[in-house]
Image (cartoon, rainbow, N blue to C red; front, side):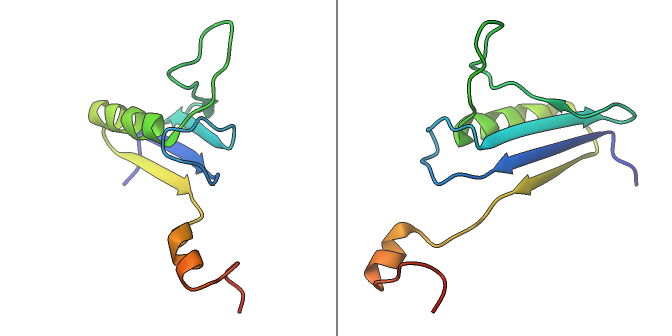
Length: 95
């Protein structure tokens, strides 16, 4: 099965879902075309705006609704919530 579109998302950054951060990036490519950086919905011709996770979520849902056979890759470092580390007095993953 071949895909007709490809999405790559860098979902890094230790921020809240509504916080804009330069570490969240979205790139998309249609079959046979080079990938393009996707501008945040809040970007304008005069000013580039950073994404937040809620915007990525909404954009991805809208995109997938209109495109068949899309593959999405998300670079996301999962972790336990900060409250877990605090509860067990941990400072990092290393024991």
